[in-house]
Length: 126
Image: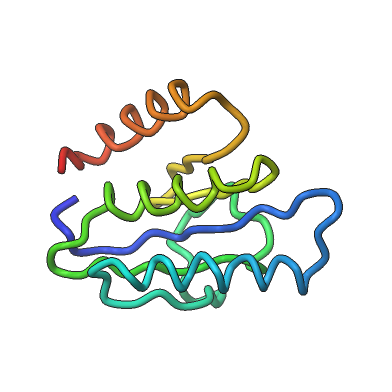
């Protein structure tokens, strides 16, 4: 990805999370993503979902991240990975078109391998 475009990032609810907790988690992740050089990070509306988006389920906890000039997909994924790693029960899905990466529940080494494969599919080497 050349820095232009958007991805949908969705905080997945655990079995004990209600809508208010999910919204709170999404706001926390949004604050961190705004620290990157992104054009915008906004709650997802039905109109924002990429055509053919799969695996997103409900829009609750979903954020649309529009990449800035220098921020690329890798920076967004790394920020999401750091945020999710702070709590073992956190789970986040990142959708680029209909390709979804789930960030959670595996060893850091395996998660890094999965991220690298996913990023390679989208030409994000930086």
